[in-house]
Image (cartoon, one colour):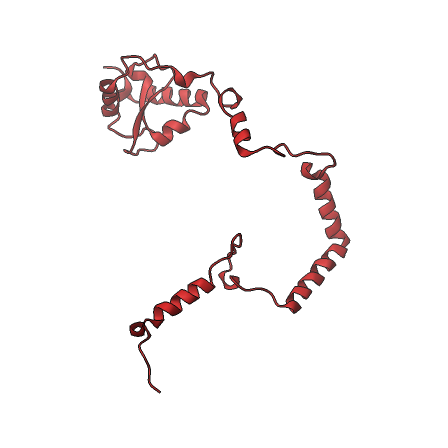
Length: 194
């Protein structure tokens, strides 16, 4: 029997394409066990699964566990309407914008920076901090952060170099971060104004 080189005949790529098409996951069907992709249970197996599920529901311990869960869950109580029923995601997101957002500071982010907060001052702060983020020690995408969150206070002892990610992080829990950075300035002499 003669053997043919399938790749020269172009059949190898055709076979690969057929295999890939055969094992493509169906829409909405994702499973960690890739062996079952594109397959289904036989009728006998389906019947066995149906009987097992029926037996499980006949077990009083299992039934009581499910009932307890449903009694304690707010989603299964009578006359309980879900908070998002009938609302679209756009409507829900608009209720969390501006003053509806729990992190709203009264429009503080729209205040303009003073003239003294310029690129020369930013470069001085970055040079003082050796062009490193003072939290994660990266050198990418550096920003200048006001320690007391007052944009008008542009003293060198109130400014610190942070990367974009850390600068976003320190905008939450402001009181804790203010204390943290003030302690850092008091400990390290390089932060004192010259």
